[in-house]
Length: 292
Figure (tube, rainbow, N blue to C red):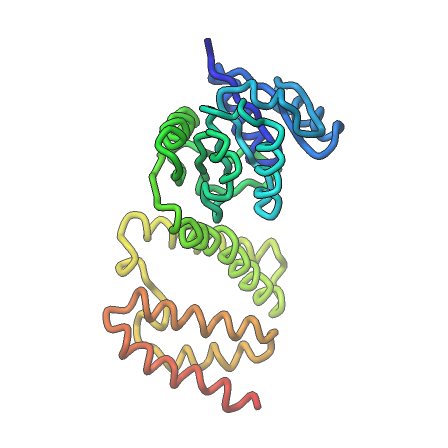
């Protein structure tokens, strides 16, 4: 008989998992969201499942219970499920999809005999389009039985499971956030800089997106050091000084981000990080001296 999965918190990640697992032959059990309307909507989007607006014992009729709720309510949901499930939780696989939290947030369920763990895809979910999961890294940690189940699910979804230590979840998640979240702010700040000097957003995108794509292609094919370009890579501190002065027209965050990223580049990309950082710091101080 095909395995069954119940989803608690069928938002972007939960729905994506459920849709794809259904197509792979999994049976979809209870779909739990904060309201009956949203639960019905999730079931329609998934194409299967039983909508529920509250946690009920029916959730535990599945082989795997997946908690895909916001981090700030995950512990509370685990406590409620432990109270409802009781001895029925013994031997159940319970996974959550948080990137920063580890399996220990599900301790109330583990005390009831459940095998708990976490599985998180290193991918961005906007809710506007289906994200690619093929080849995507899934971080997995938790009890051995939970890890085995999570690895099976990750591979079924086309992903590549990687076991990590529970204590390393925040650093792992910070890495992904730096790329998917903070890098987006970097791109938008560069776009706004061009708009400020007269570009339309369309022209700004036309200028920057090919640059970003080529940089990523170079990074993938050549590695970080060979792919590094720009004035700092050439030791052109005069041009950096011009950048610093030009950015005084923009909000302080633009200036601070440029300085922080330049120093980060010196640390992780330069062959002589200490010497490069020292020279760079002197150049960046020009901003501080002349802006007060």
